[in-house]
Image 1 (cartoon, rainbow, N blue to C red):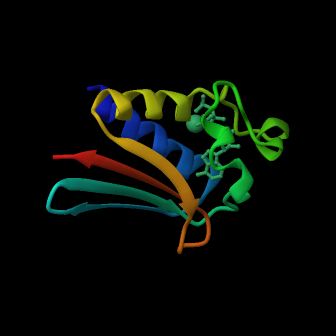
Image 2: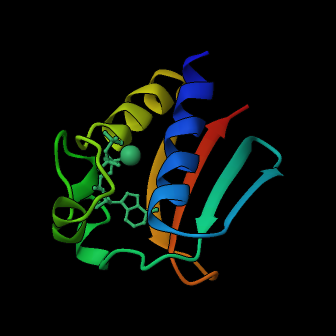
Image 3: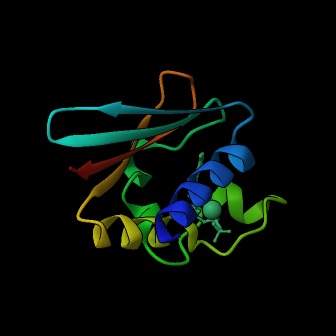
Length: 105
Ligand SMILES: Nc1ncnc2c1ncn2[C@@H]1O[C@H](COP(=O)(O)OP(=O)(O)OP(=O)(O)O)[C@@H](O)[C@H]1O
Ligand SMILES: [Mg+2]
């Protein structure tokens, strides 16, 4: 249930800050990689770690109507860590933001 919450948080961000959403999973030898992509504005790379801090919201989000308090990503990281995994952000090849979860098998 917690893991479902983590995925939900990433997908709702992609929905809120992007337009189209792509979710994919890759089964590797010793890990599973889950990727959520969107084609929104993305984030400057300098914020890829900042946004995992509780209550952090990028300037544009603060001033817009997207709502939210800035706890979605910190919760995602807590849950993923509790499952022994890692999560980070990258630039998406779709044009917006990419969230990558890696889980050990
Ligand atoms: N897919 C995305 N594209 C662009 N910016 C994003 C994306 N996901 C998160 N962000 C940025 O990271 C910030 C933190 O995200 P987080 O999910 O923690 O909080 P939130 O979405 O603002 O509020 P909530 O607590 O409702 O999730 C957002 O305010 C936004 O600035
Ligand atoms: Mg959020």
